[in-house]
Image (cartoon, rainbow, N blue to C red; front, top):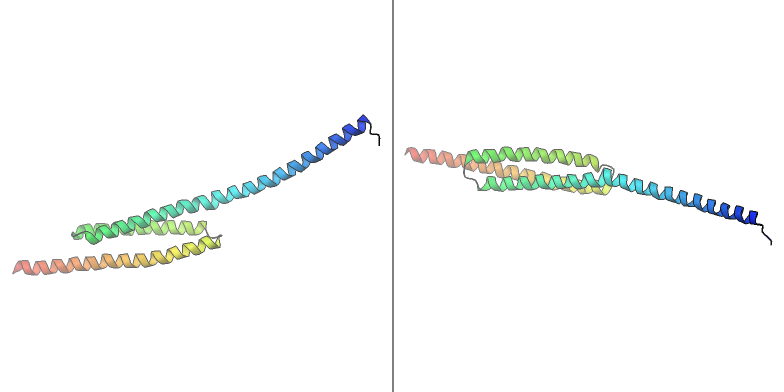
Length: 151
């Protein structure tokens, strides 16, 4: 088969054009996948990591305040620790609500957050009991001291 120069140029240009269009289509598909992955990272992963770190910091702060309250002997300090605990608790609950909004579309993250909520509710109830019992103990000690110092 005898191909003229004109036919060779046209066929070469057509093949190169076809490959260029194919490469462009594949690039667009890849860019769309990258865009969706980037969107998922910016809308789900980063807020989730940031929110979980905030939850961790608030939870550790509540634990520190509870321990400090447990070892304190001064009732005014105990009341201050309780107020700080309540502030940290409300901060934790706000961060938990924000994180719940972020992960509402992901079932596995939502179930993990539900497990965190169960643990938090149990811890919160126990910590409040520690504060209440310690306050009752301090009040009882003050009553006993006041009765024995009069005698």
